[in-house]
Length: 452
Figure 1 (cartoon, helix red, strand yellow):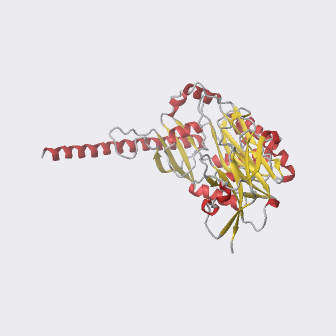
Figure 2 (cartoon, rainbow, N blue to C red):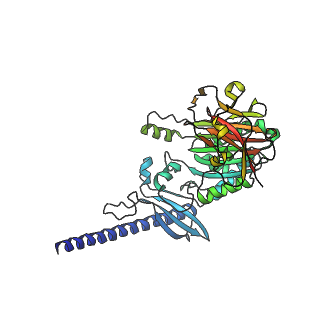
Figure 3 (cartoon, rainbow, N blue to C red):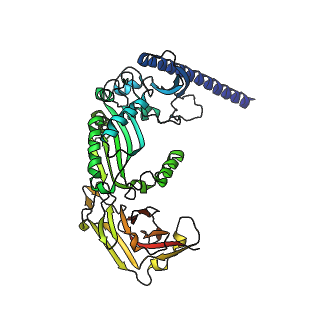
């Protein structure tokens, strides 16, 4: 009887706790909803905007009820006006993060118009070419003095919020866009996140890196005071948005898969130049957390994927960021004859091949064991720790026909063999085949031919 009484008390407390928690949660939702309604009325003069739903940021305590569950002070209000749906982010005590007593509120009602203005008047005007594909694009205000938002603020408060939407392009009360993008961007500091693929041309290939840098310099001039990250790729014209590229992008968007590295490397691109910028406020914030942080205000990185001849029909390019091969003294290359008992001679390549099994015949392209490496232990301050990759370009004229695929078989640290350990695919690029190999590891070239 005593046990039953205790159990009933526990159950009663649980229900009471859940009821109290639900009531507090509802009250917080109502508070955030009212703040959003008043905000859009003040900023845009909206008197007929309707609230569709309110979603509070997820609690770090998890989904199981707890007597100590803290009701989040942050939420997203989904609203509609004349059929157009938009979000308002609200943090009732978010101002404390930047030393302000007021709540932080921002919306994405004008985000599409603002991004369209940036694309039309900046990207198209200063970009590497007129044809491009935007992979990622968000713009927002940044955290700092006064009424400023930013990616850091959003990720800090809304990292647990899952709406199925991207929610980085938000602007606060004073950041109302009136149609003049130059004036809008000049009035306050903004951050931009951009990943863009420009279509390049072979005849202009040597200039694409300089053109990319000029475009990034212009972007830094506009967005350099914010927490910005811009990545520029100049695609080879015959590869630009081909079916493989489109298919991989679709898979990444639909299933959250990583982008195949060939799309970010020399198979598809003439160059890759990127820049990160950090505000002084953010650097100061990080230095308080970690005094030894090495964040720079503006930090450029890139690779020109410059191939240098190493042998007849074989050339090499660095895949280490900020390191380009200038001539043959920048790398180590060897191609030595295989011994009679060399593991490459006796390997079962069909068994090693991880791709779809079928009726294929596997043959060594030649009797050579190759090895490539970086000649210098340090390249512009970056150390090579033995895991860096090098791009190998092989002339198609070296590969007898019929050959359906060329495989790079590498010898790993433990002596075992693996087919294209670093990157499974050797891809066609013009009159060549390009693959990636681990620096400092032996490898052999193997032909794979379908058997009819």
